[in-house]
Image (cartoon, rainbow over all chains, first blue to last red; front, side, top):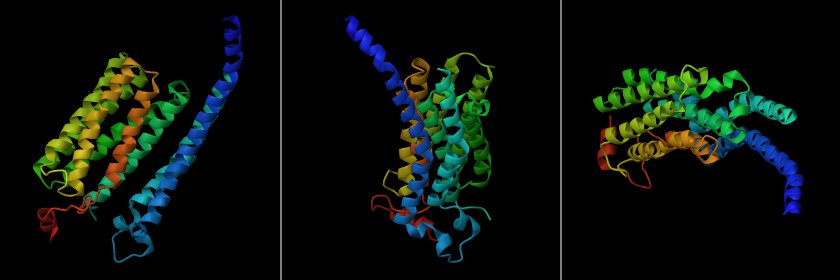
Length: 96
Length: 195
């Protein structure tokens, strides 16, 4: 019984670190995966990118197409939101 | 210069996708890390309030039917209500976590509005299918805020709530003004789209 408790104490820190690493990886991956989803969509349905073959569409139809929007959202998250979260995750780790 | 309805839906889908990613990030790192920067704590309530605010011009300018106008108006009001109560909770003006039930109310009202204002069956057209799917998604997701109140640390509720917005974004991105769904497109829908 005592040895089980002792082993548990020893194993907790690496598990904790692995969980934190997994969280950081997930945050890092969210934006690029979203942008990748938009890229895959634009390859699967290239006609959605009216910018590449304009046929007299208006500005709205040229600029606002779902694959482009998905890529844009992924980039905004990856460049504007994720870095701060990763910094704070690291800071909370060093405080523990 | 007024954009087509599908373009407005795609723009809202972008907002919902960003909201979903932020909520997912909060579910992953936990509320304590997420709120280490003050502006992040206000992000989701502000986005919810802004989505409600942007729905007001949609209500005013896209008046294809009275039912559409009433549905857009209902969404605008409940989205702003949910955003405002969450802002008050973050700011400390409201203290009871039971105020989070307002988000459940907003989802229930939004889901009901989707289902009530869609008069056609599921396979009438893609738009009809998406209205039904969005309605039931919102109604089903109303359980997540309740779960968050009862078990705030459970990733099931926070993750489920976040993924709800990602699912709503995917459904809105799939919208077209006139398109078939699983090969079905009603002749009535086709005829009504003819100029």
